[in-house]
Structures are given as C-alpha cells and as structure tokens.
Length: 188
Image (cartoon, rainbow, N blue to C red; front, side, top):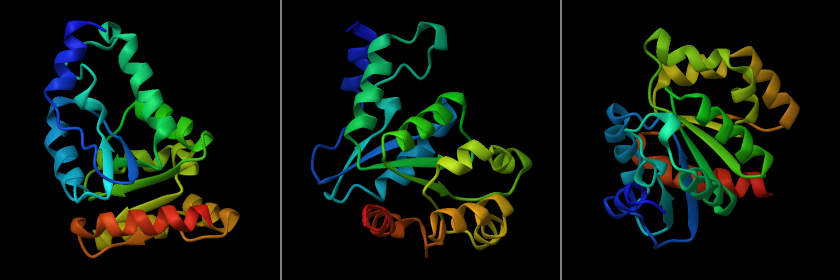
C-alpha cells in the first residue's frame, strides 16, 4: 500500500461502531465532499458503520493514477455492506458500476435524492439501467418525490418488483430510520 493511500485513510473518520454497514456511492469530486459528509452525519448514531470511499481513495488524483488498493478496498466494502447508499443527483461511471455490482451482490441499494432542480441534477433519470438497479429511492423534497413517483420506468419497475420504490421522508434527519426499514423490507 503506497503512502498516498495510507495518508487518505488516516485523514478520514471511519466509524467502527454499529451493526448496519453502509457503503456510500457518490461522485467524490472535491466539491461534493461536504454534501457526502452532511448526509452521512445523519447516520452517525452508533447503529451504522459508514464507509465513504473518498476517505480511502485519492479523489483529487487523475483516475489513471489511482492505486489498485483503492479499487480492491471499495470492492471489499461493497461485499461486506448491508446497504449501499447512492447520493444523487450527481454521479459518474464508477458510481454506475458500483450500483450494478451492489445489486448483483444482493445488497439493498437505496438512492437518496436531496433535490432535482436543474437539468444536470435530473440527468440520472435518463439512465434506465441505473434506475433499474435501485431497490429504493428516498427523498425529503416533495417536488422530487412527485417527479420520481410519476416516472414511467420507475412505475413499471415497481410493478415488476411488487413494492413501492419511491419514499418521501420528513427531512434528511429521518434518513437513518428509513434506511433500516427498507433494508428489513428487502430482506423479507
């Protein structure tokens, strides 16, 4: 393991306490880190062990320079996760791969959508494979809930899997309870 990888690990909080293991799937560009940490802070109550890849990957490096250990660590964490939490709306190809891999491994894959106010934030709705690999979509934004609930692909997917995919929560602080409920629902 190279020095840069060790440094990234030592600079980030990695919660060991808790029973529910959450792998966070998100664009890890530097301008997204505050949002990731904000959402994850709502899960930091002792019941969750949260893995945020940006704490272990060289998010500020060119993708051609990322060490193999980062890929392997992410794969191990997905394999060990109970829930894979996708922080929408912005994500990239690596996130799409993580979503598909997580679903293939039988994980509970939940997207959290904070808002959908711009075309760029709505762009993921064009990615039918990504939508198809999500088990649930959670939002605390009524406009986003309405848009997602009326999405024809999502409606057909709900019919196919025979359960409601889109859930409205009161606020971001309610995310922890909803994640646990959805994980239990998927496992039954």
